[in-house]
Amino acid sequence: MTYAHDCATIIILVTLDNMTAKIIRFGVSLDEALLDRFDKLIKRRKYTNRSEAIRDLIRHELLKRDWDEDREVVGAITYIYDHHQRDLLNKIIDVQHDHQEIIQSSQHIHVDHHNCLEIIAIKGNARAVADLTDTLKAIKGVRHGSLSISNIGNVK
Ligand code: NI
Figure: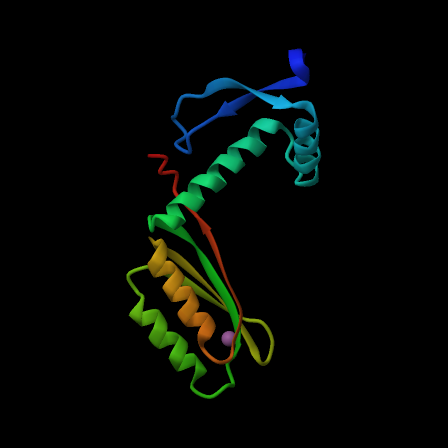
C-alpha cells in the first residue's frame, strides 16, 4: 500500500527469540524505491515475506552488537587438516584442551585418506571465541578455518 509522498508502508511482525514472547505489529514508512530494492533482495535470499527478512536483519544487528561488546555467543568453528602432517593433531588437541571452557563438543569427520574435517561447537564470550578461532587457524596445516556465530536471543 502507498501513502502520501511516495512512501510505502509495510507491516512488520517482531517476535523475541523466546517462543512465548508477545508478537507486536508496527508500521514502517519507506521510500518506494528502497522498498523495491529490499523486496528484490529478500526474493533472492528466498524469504517468503518481509517480516521474516526484517526479523533476521534485526537479529543480525543484535548479534553484531553482542560481538562488539564481548557478550556471549554460540556457534561453530570448522576447519580441515591433513592428519598425516607431523604433530599437527597433537597441536590441535592441545589448543582444544586450553579452551575447554568454551568448547561444548567437537565432531571429527574423516573426509578422505588425508583430510579430516573438524566441527567444534562453542559457547562463550566473543573475544574468547575469536581467540580460539584465530589460534586454530594459525596452526600450520589447518586450512579453511571459519567461524559461524549466533546468539541465544538475549535482546536486553
Ligand atoms: Ni580423520
